[in-house]
Image (cartoon, rainbow, N blue to C red; front, side, top):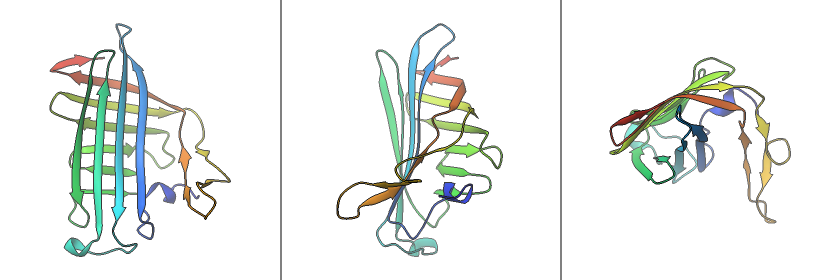
Length: 170
C-alpha cells in the first residue's frame, strides 16, 4: 500500500469500499454513532467510459442514538459523475454525500450524509498514522488465496453537527 495514491479507486479490482464509523458525544453528554460507507462493485475488472462502465456504487449512511437507528442508501452507476473516488486530494462521493481530505496527507477531512430523518456534517482531524492490516496491508481471508488490501485510520476525532428529526445536535 502506497499513500496517498491508494486512497483512490482501483479499477483492476472487483470490490472496494471506503467507510467511517464514529462514536460521538453531544454537548449535553448523549451518545451517538455515525456510519458512512461507499462501496464500488465491478461486474468486470476493467474500466469503461460513460455508460460503458461495468461498475456500480452503493452508499449507506446511518445515525444512531440510545433510542433511534436511522439510515439511508443510494445507488449509482459509474461513468456518469454521480459517484466515485478521486485522489489528490481524496474525495469519495455519491450524490451529495462525501468523505473528503482537506489536505494531501489527510490530516484534516470532512464527512457529510443525509437521509429523510437525519443528516450529519463533521470535520475530521487525524492524530496518528494509518494502520496497515495483515501483512503490510495484505490481509489474507482464506486458505485458497482470498485476500484484501486493507488499512484503517483509528486516530480521527470528529466535530460538527448531527440533525435528527429536524433537531440540530452539537
